[in-house]
Image 1 (cartoon, rainbow, N blue to C red):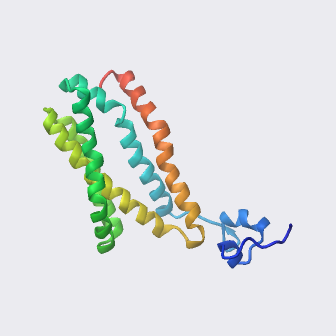
Image 2: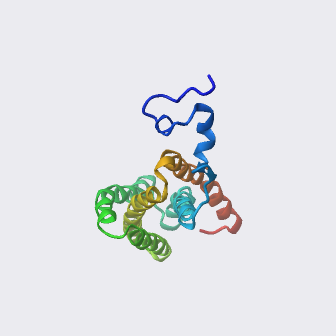
Image 3: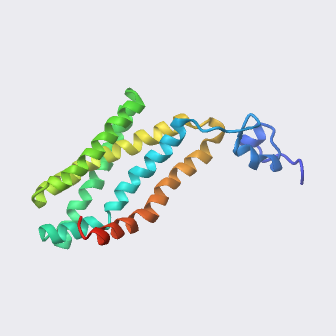
Length: 193
């Protein structure tokens, strides 16, 4: 029915929008098209590149460990799982750090540490050194995901927060869909890690 209000308690109902006006209202703020600020696009690109880097290596690390260190499947699984375990352990503490200090500064420090640990993979000359580097790399990853999510929520207007979080989460899925294929393509193109 044209002009019928959307269900009780919804954001659209509270603001007096009708069902036909609700869709366009997602893309507008105060009746005008929303203009993205630099911080808005930075957060989106930031999380996409973070997950892209993570998923780019996902299919290659088992091959690298097997070929360069002669690691068995069991050892490869243990070495690679250290990353996830470290990320899980650090996340509750990084939430406290993000709330206690400047969110953007915490984000930049963690992103820098995340990028630096990639060099550790190249420098690792033994499987033990690689395992230590991989496990330590999970810490900045866990902290970055928390800090980045918090910064993304900060830049989203309250009226569009659900939409923004959905699009933000899409960055992870998009990186997961294309990065492994690109990683394998690059490995085959240059015939090196």
